[in-house]
Image 1 (cartoon, helix red, strand yellow):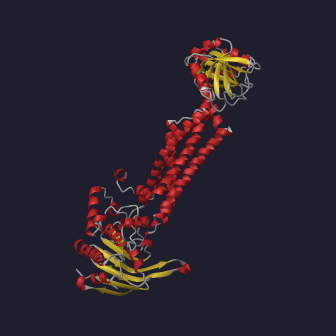
Image 2 (tube, chains in turn red, orange; image 1 turned 90 degrees about the vertical axis):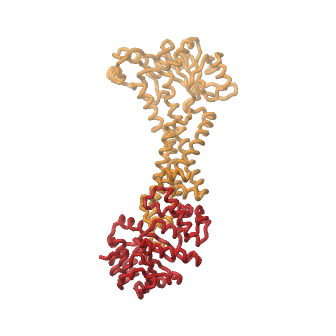
Length: 241
Length: 391
């Protein structure tokens, strides 16, 4: 038993059945420490996104173990998985904002899932995080009227507004300029150090690699390197590869 | 609106925001639901008029039991029965009074050449208690030869004639070689069987319908004594009177049976019923199409919400919210246009087409149900919203 917010043991994952069955992950063993910023790297098809979706309770874990926030995901019920997802924050490469909702309303969706019915407080929180991300003057804009970078920042705000315990991000800075990208990563780092928020991110952005506590590289579904960047480490993570 | 719905739902009104985001589609959907409502309202309106006109003649009668020919399906059709049954019925315990009722359709031509048919009732004017209280006082005046009370709502009747009659003047017209004089009015209205109605004495009736015999009325109306159950008297009559070609019913049952026959056995009733069904079907298809397209267009957003931890009930809530919004917004214009068309139909046909409160409530509830059913079917598409596909 480990107190790491994310751990995997002997994790395999397959897609398809019969002759079409293809193994995407091979024997992944990881423990990711609370408050750390971990980057997953690797070429396309290396399994990093599959790993992210398994940790994010978005796919069924069948072979091996994945523990997230103390829950074993192998065989977990849909209720448990939905409950866990509410404690996570997702930042997608495509912003996936709801086109009918304003920036504030999109961010509010990140709070509403927790049954937050204090509309005024929730709106205040949404405005606050949008302001921090430089979107104070875009609060009531629909996504159709925002630039790609602005949309991505709204998506980041939506993921962070509920103070999730784990953030899972897929190329979160790809659509952002240097300054906005830096703001986002600083925010994630700050959440890690102040609130213990753990971030796992798929990225190839060198600006983020410099700031990451740990960089895990995957190739053909296997971990090929796992580097701790001690300068960025508040506490050295337990590493088990 | 958005703030109001947020307050009502305790959450963002995603359904409302989604529907109103694509205004063109929203208006098309509302128009579709309104059209379906219109179809249903019109069919129900005409069916209601059919029902109303079927039982309308009962409104001028005041009796407890009616004896009729067994081959008749409604008050206004069927053969004759022997007047002797009236005397036999009077001998049955509980029957206090009886009178024959003659019914015939009388055509006459107006000055402008148009033809009007009047469903004519011939009754013994010495027994005004057998007619509705609003007509009874005028019966005495019908003792004059060839006089009648004319229906104010008679379709095609010039307004001047009705106005003159209402002011106490008389209106004479030729029919079947006789001259009839209308000396007053009653207010029933035209229906599917005739353009209007007319009340006259049995003597006048037999003059203008020379082929009819006083010994063979269409019906015999009976009154029962106070405190005696009508059904008990009906049973006694059934055991006492010869049953050959004789139907014995309470007036209430007779009206209900007429209604059932017209709405379920006559092609007209079935056609209108089918029209209602088609209207509902059109509404179902339109709402399903709108909602399922809406779900398909927002699959990525729904998948994102799933990833965020929103459960199935949240998505069902959105779709049912949309269904209810479409039902309400479609019903309002559908109702308003239907009221206008009812008025137009009344002025053109004289049929008793009325927007009854019960019908409006029924159609609204039906619209809600139909939209909810469509929404429930549309939710099947939600299974395609897989959050794992988002990465």
